[in-house]
Image (cartoon, rainbow, N blue to C red):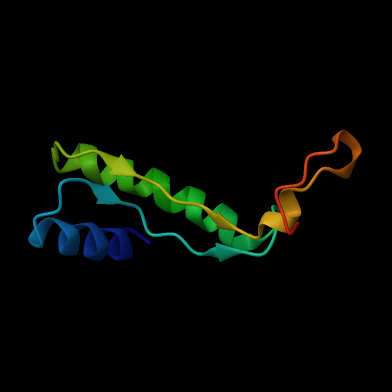
Length: 81
């Protein structure tokens, strides 16, 4: 995982980005294994930034199926309309 983070962030640094983005994956729902992987990747990005004295901000993305975030009981539906 550390090598993956190193490769991803170094690529962004080489291209002169204004900020860094942690790698992330599509998660089908809140219990998807990729979500926990992405949280570990975010932690690794911040560790890498600190250890390498990188001054750029790090942003993280989470990509999840919006249907899993629908709450019918309170009438909130961010899914299909």
